[in-house]
Image (cartoon, rainbow, N blue to C red; front, side):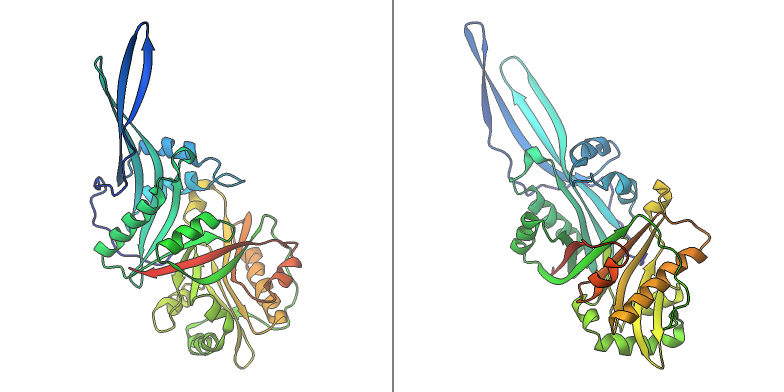
Length: 350
């Protein structure tokens, strides 16, 4: 995973909330012939998460999507993240009446922000308890994460939103984020059989290939449509050709190419997925796919999947991320995948 800036923030820091508290409510309770008025004042605070918040958060995150949610898999990683901060919103209720005074609190929202290369912050995992939505809590979390990044020198903020999540898209637009690319995501739970001889002879790139790779990407419409980014463990990173990003990926043997006197296809793979270890669920990611025609795209994709059979580890799932192109769907259909999920990559200056 790309290195990120060190976080020197106090993990126990409590923020002053910008969320408007709920209006004071009055409950009328009948006790015999007497009427007792109870005044409950609700206050919302945004603060750094602590260990005890985990179960409260997982309770309202259990059914976020049709298949559940991934927060339980990444909570420990986010909580221990030295390059970012796991944030929660806590609702505190102060109840006052003539018989007693009582205070109770509960966690009703969560999000995570991570400081990344190129003075960028990545925003993820925004979840709000369904019983507390439409109170601008998600917007307040976004504002807090952006402030966190600004204080640490970040200049841009990025996030992805599912293509069918209209509510989140409207929120991002309201916060001045713009869509810079659209991505397809495919998941294979069955590892394809090894493909025999590949005519285009793809290979793992070396440092000697970097100049030709750059020349190819500069002319590539796929590279432009990607927002000049690639994916690593569900975060989108800059693939600036004038930075160290590409050389670092090549050094770590994560770049695959098709070369016939010149580069005609590029793919990036990722095996370093942090939650693999915790969940014993080995995942192989293909995080960028780009070729000059459909035949070469199929060749480089097959080569990437062939690598699974030469690895010592056993992979249980393949995840494929690709900027939306005219022929990626045709190639994936041959693998039995016809309906990809789609995501919009958002970015804004901060």
